[in-house]
Amino acid sequence: MKRILVLGATGAMGIYLVPELARRGFAVDALSLDESGPSAGMAGVTYHRCDAKDNGILRKFFARCHYDAIVDFMLYSTAEVEARHRMMTENTDHYIFLSSYRVYADCEHPVRETSPRLLDVTTDEVFLARRLKEYALYKAEQEDVLRASGARNFTVLRPTMVYSTYRYQLVGLEAPTFLYRAQKNKLTVLPENALPLHAAMTWSGDVAKLIAGLLWKDAAMGETFTVGSGEIITWGEVADIYRELTGLRIMTVSPEEYAKVFAISPSEWYKHIYDRFFDRVIDNSKILAVTGMRREDFLPLREGLARELNSIRGRHIWTPNKYSDSMDTYLASIGK
Image (cartoon, rainbow, N blue to C red; front, side):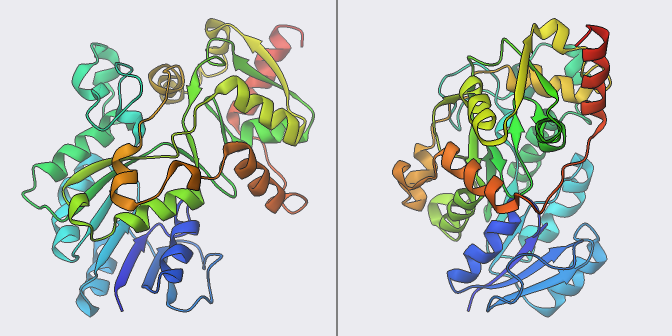
């Protein structure tokens, strides 16, 4: 039986990947800071509550066995990747490394694996100077570390936005902002320029199938894949889905006004201007060719959001975050 180590096993993608691997007959060591995940008790799944970023802990796992695959969902600095990548590739036959579709610039439509990356083409010196803090930049740097390593037994994944049981997105907002506000019948402010743009969102269960389908494929070794459904949908249509499913109340403003809400967080604002304000249509033909999945196999966004939101309805109460508070301050300043 093949044995797989999953780091960050109870996150938005891990909670679907672990049971997917178990259903395929693999033994899974699932590492997480949480006690266990929803697949606890499944045959072949063992949860380990520990810090998966602790190299000493990982060496103990590697001393016990050589893993057939490692799927790594941890968030690293580039320095941590430089210090750790050899330990990973040397202790497995196939190392799956998580990058992001956010590395792509807004140069080609649709986006594909060969499309230019922000790190390589942006002329925004202020943005580049923040490379240690900006996800789109340091993820691209980390990809380069792996490619320069001399190893070939790795695969770089660039997932789109992934929605899951407690993870939802609306333009640059996350669930604790806009779903909390829907819950409280508060207005949610959105930037009018984003609504006609395309959003790239994929259900976590489908991402799990794509990842599992890449394992040990010769065509995946040393390669990069954009991971997503390829569904073409605008942010305006996404907002309409949330409005239908949750009663969300929306007010649109100019991007200049919207920026006032995110003045408290430069990184969150850069996420908007260097991703959410890009037109994100992806070409997923490369990963479909390797995994054998078809476009019609993916869960449509409306159906997926309805499924996930219904699964937590009545048993989860959203709590506000600083962006919701900032939105209240902005609305009060304009008399809303």
